[in-house]
Structure formats: C-alpha cells, structure tokens
Length: 490
Image 1 (tube, rainbow, N blue to C red):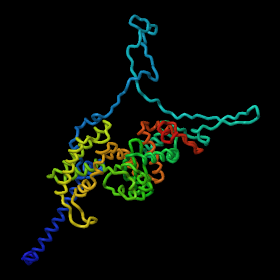
Image 2 (cartoon, helix red, strand yellow):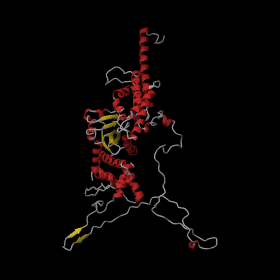
Image 3 (spheres, rainbow, N blue to C red):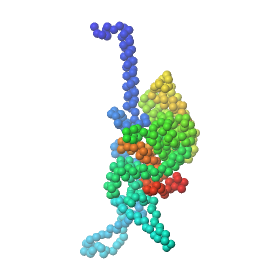
Image 4 (cartoon, rainbow, N blue to C red):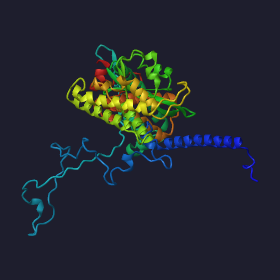
C-alpha cells in the first residue's frame, strides 16, 4: 500500500490545497521572471546597452526587425555635410606638362593656355610641438629707472612649461573624448612629439577646472533663472573603492550643469538648483525627491512622456488583450507631434481643436485601464500592486503634470535633452570602469558643464579650450569668446 493511500481524505484535501497554493506561487514567480526578462530599452528605463546583456533577452521590436544590414547611416531628415569646394583655398600648387613633345621640343618652353581642371585636397598638417622662448627684457630710462617687460598671461611662472594649445588638447582628450590618462599622454606623445607625463596630464584637470569655476557658477545661476529646465541623474562609480555615486544634471536648451552626490535629498540640496528653481521642472516620475516639500518653490512639473510611453509599452506586453495601453500611447504621441507643430509655428500652446480630442482619448484610456487592472487591497506601503496599476494611478492623479506641455509650448514633453547631456558620463564609465578620485570626478563634471554649455552655444570643443587661459599666478582671462562674455557680464 502506498503512502498516499494511507492518508485520510482530510489529509489528501489539505495536501492538494497546499500543492495548489505552491503552484500559484511558482506560477506568479515565473510570470514575474518572464516579465523581468522581457524588459528592455523600449519598455523600461533600461539603457540600450542592456538589451542583449542576458541570454534570451530580446531588444525592442524596432531593433529586432529594423533596417537590413547595410542600410545604417544618415537618418532621414537629419542635417548632412559634404566636402565642399572652397573659393579661397589655403594654397595653390601649379602642375605643368613636363618632358618632350612628339616633335622633340621641350615642353618647358611651351605657351601656357590656362588651367584645364582643378582638384582640391583637404588634409591636415603634421603636428609637431614647437618650443617658443619668451625673453623678458630689462630697459633703463634716461631718468635712471629700470623696467622689466611683463610676463604674458599664457606663459607660466616656471622656466619651462607647456603652452595653452597643448593644454587644450589634453583637456579635450580627457573630458570630451573620455580617454584614460595614460592613453591621452600616449596620444599626445605620438601625435605631437611632446613628451608629456601621466602626472602632468592628470594635473591638468584641476588647473582647467579652476580656470572655468566662475563660468560654471554663472551657468548654474542661469539654469536656476530659466523658465524650464530638465533634471536627471545617472550612476557613476568613482573613488578608491569604486563606490556608486550619482551624476546629477540640470539642463536647458542653452546651459547644463552637473554635480556629484547620491540619490537623496541632501545631495540634491547640495547640488543647489532645485532649491532655488522657480520654473517648470521636467523629469521622470519614478523618483519622489523632485516632489519633496523642500522644493515647493518649483513652478510646476512635467513628467517625461518618453518614460511614460515605455511604461505603456510594457503594459501592452503584460496585458496583450487590452487596448488601453496602445490608446494612451497613440494619444500621447499625437499630443507630442502637435506640440512640435505648435512650437515651430510660434504658438504659446496647442490649438484646442488639436489638443481636445487627443486629451479625451488619453483620459478614456486611463479610465479603462483603471477598471481592467484593479487595485490589490492592503496597506499602500507594503502591498504590491499589479503591473501597470501604479502607472495608471499616476496618469490619473498627475494628469496636469503629464500634459503640461500641451498648455505651454515652452515646456518640453520629454526629458531627452537632459538624457543626451548625461550620456557622455556613461561613455566615460564604459571606457574607464570607474574614476579613481571623487575630487577629480568633480573637476571633470565642472569641465563637462563648461564644454557642454559652450557646444550648446555653437562652439566646437577644442576651439573653446584654446580660449581658456590659466596662468600659474592664478589669473584667468577666459572671456575672449562671445558666450563667455555674456555669461560673465563682460
């Protein structure tokens, strides 16, 4: 007789009930694991680099079934460039026929009939470090007084030093091209012949950061005074132990400033933007610090529609038979398209005839979703809600913060500007793994604030660094460029 047959009826019923309960738990766990595996950059806040990080994880449909190989390149509608013919070339090299004619005459004496065709070659000269000696003369006036020539600002007090162009190249390689210190030193040696040391290259960061400190402070003030700014944060490992920190950012169309800290209220206060900012803050809805009472002076919030669309894509995969996720996506995309049209036309808000039907469609989708995804009873702090329910409640309770862009075209519907400004820091971590010092990391962030703002004003990176003049005596005359003069009120 088997052990099962010896069990009583009541025991069998209890066993089956326990097994059914265990099956349900396992089924829910498998469903949760499958859902986690299905998360990618198209339906969550995960970066594209995570799409193929795990076996079995598929990327977004647009990547899986995108353009065929060989079709990648310039996107439709994107600005292009070509190798242009210059009316005033830097140099002209004449080429005349040489040798003998068939008649035996030397072509050097032939009559010139003009240029048949011309070819222009765009190239760069080979760069070699030049040593320029600055001699400071002493003179004696007829009255007997002696005078010594002043030392130029770009010349260091040391007898031998590197010049501003080489310093600009080093900062460009470290901060803009994200090269590690040793590789940057090697590139400078190979490309210019200047035998710079890794210690010198590393020390340039602190010197350059000190030179732009006043400008970065002014940039922060201008962000605070802006009517709209985007706020974002991303992880960055730095310090001797590779501790996880956060790069905090505040961006506008013309300015950007970065800070280093944690993802906590104290760090955001130390960053010093949100506490004084009175405009509309564009950000993701996943982090509640942006809504903290200490930042009550913020004039309004705009939740990033791009993040909401990805969350709705996840809801569509979670509830394949439901129409509300697709309906909400369609309405939001329509509103964003109408925003672009209205802003390009100089309109202060979306026309009512364009916004009204799309807003009604969005609200209807939220109502249907709330009805189809009921809330799980229990304490709000401990009860886990079904997938999509927190999103739907956010769309319902914070509708004004979701659709604010439709009533004010100055407000961006997405926080893509901030995300683009933050992306170089992720590139830095991919290349370096982690940064060795928190202090040096802060120098890098200040330098990145400076250079990113300069680029928003139309200045290329290496040209901008040539404008930074830092003398060993502590003077800074970096206001040679138009955008710097405007920032510093010069």
